[in-house]
Length: 315
Image 1 (tube, helix red, strand yellow):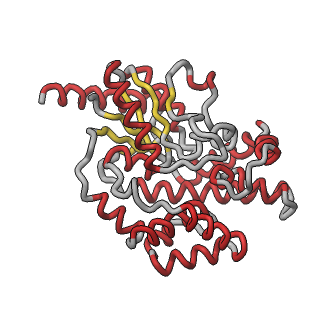
Image 2 (tube, one colour):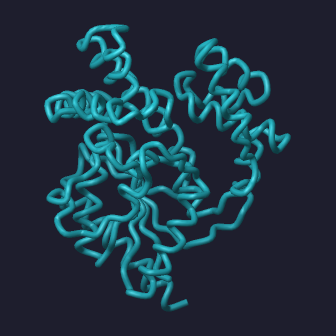
């Protein structure tokens, strides 16, 4: 199997456009590593590339799950396995790109508790706690049993807080310990990893501009349509950035200007958490897109990939 090209970075840094350019140079196909772009109907708020924006480059794992369905890291890993086998048979370069670090780690290193830690009844009870007592109360429970994970997750990230509690209570070990054990596993695939970065003010400007573009493109109508279809406000898909903030507006908790302010703030915070996650990986080659042209960054990634491919074949 060819080495997997991995392109990561915070939201709005420019991953999608660069990955498409790289795919054209290395005869590649893109595998999305975004936990929300898998959902059908979550288009504008997830910055899912349109058919035109994909420029004929095949994209995998977009629109594979109904918005009212649950989708786990284990589900993602199994789907990627099938895609990688197909790409290998056709001699295509797999390009794994996105901002969901846990999905990328699951593919490259495996997932040590993929068949464990599932309890629908417990999950429902935790959901009820969040509804009746608030996200902060649920997050405090997590801080007691798994302080490391609690520090990493925002209290409003209800889905992941519930999942971490579910794993702890069903396996007897906190999520942080499972992830530590996972780090000891040997890599399952050879990967060439690139991280995209910009200086913080420039990244935040791009985030703010993207939010404004999403609103202009009809994000509010997209959220309204999902709710009109009967999608519950507590559904996993509705916890995505852009959706939960606008749900608050539609419920009359604040005006639209405040919803947009919250969305920009929450997206900046999310980008910061993404960078913290990816900076821990010492194998990532970082490219500063404020200092490189898009052409130079593309050539750098493609050249490094071909060099690794030749080395692999020589071995």
